Image 1 (tube, rainbow, N blue to C red):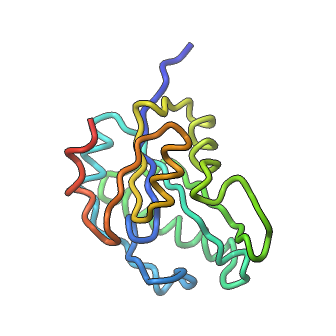
Image 2: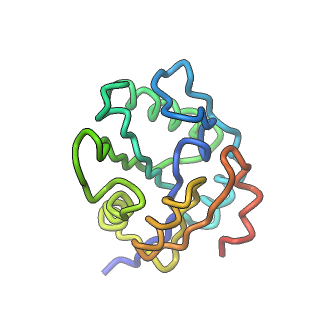
Length: 163
């Protein structure tokens, strides 16, 4: 049996791209934050990097899954140009006011559990960096250590909290 991997899950808005206060609905409003060296360091330490993001704006009809894919492809490409591999993106397209309850919208752990299952990840050796309490809650519900940062806070400031 192959050894379980360790991962750092990352929230998107306010962590990988600039927090806009609400949803980032248009590609033009999508501004990547410079966390390149911090994420490269985590990658060099053997962590797989996975994105877990609520995207309730899809359920609200504010943007399409195609527009979201454009943003995620751009994010992946910009980080790749800096030697950082964002392995996968897990997103919840639901919103409780529009689609009812689901098991993937943070603070529920569904997005992380998908990543853990897909990539054979050991939650006890993994982390979730997010700028909302719900990110930490989702991480802990999935058995992953949550790290709360302020929106747009450089990830380099919390590297010491990761083994």
